[in-house]
Image 1 (tube, rainbow, N blue to C red):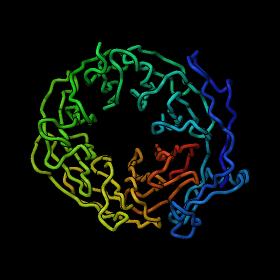
Image 2 (image 1 turned 90 degrees about the vertical axis):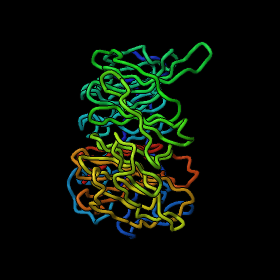
Image 3 (image 1 turned 120 degrees about the vertical axis):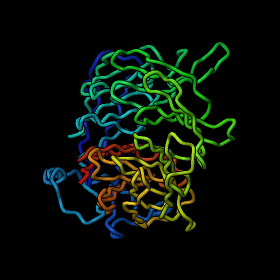
Image 4 (image 1 turned 45 degrees about the horizontal axis):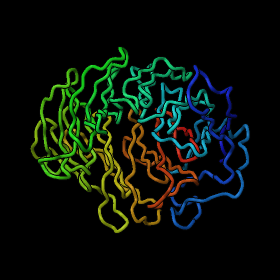
Length: 445
């Protein structure tokens, strides 16, 4: 299929008040060397050197979609299992790749965040709604209570998602301020927890964790934070911050639990086998789930004892050995996780009971150092996405059956690939895939 709607850039597309810096005007001209491809079983695609067997390029731009094709893209259609859906639209952003994953606001606006600017795109049509430059984004934006898009960077800036208009701007936590935003930990309603660096007279200072009320635009509390790895997870009654170990030994990952409302330290735990290389999530209740190489383990967050349960990966790496797990994602009571051998797993978060495990054995050339795919779940929990360096695959959450596979010819799965990993967001009916040069919207079913 050819590209979806391509819309003209310019000052007319900008909305909201004045902004500093140069105007961010993405190039929206159609790419002349891209052909969207997918695979249905092993029947689609042609072999090219150095990557996957199903990548291809086209010397000329594909023909524009006919009206019938455009209508068909918006209607349910019967596809062979694995066949890619027809893109609903394509938005080209040459040379200004998304730095963070797209953010979808109320099934209406796809928010793209680069190094210089934030762009709002109509999720239905692919038309650019607004561009806001001069923000110098320094982290993943988030939505507070469903009505404010908060962008960290040159301070904390809240935008109106439909128009990009600045609702309010806080000078606190600017990149050059004494306390500067360094990383998002967690969000719940109008409260956000993040890390900040305190710069002293002699240069870089200490790290702190900050709780901030977006509605009141006020800091609730702050507390000291150990150096090293910092990631946050919300449990029912606490914010758990994972930090790099010190006295426990190099490479150890330690959990520090803080009360949500006051930041009081509740406990510290070191879990057996948990290292800084482990990928951790929670079930939002009391279970920590850690991907530790080829093993997935569940821990009772408040007890530093042996794992409650343990599950091994099913996929095989390039040398035929078990593949490492990626970051698990919990939806409801189920943890979903992919491994580097293109296997997908559904496991009960609290008990470790296996719902299903599927190994897909996709026809790919062996890669020297493939990165483990990311896992995403649709809001209603009906669909699972596995996003890797070269493709995005959709599955039925009920049994793990393959629905479709999608890639664009700009994907480069090589271990030294200059292309960034495709960044993905989804609703219950659409998927937004942001690559190095284009953003695509696909029907989920």
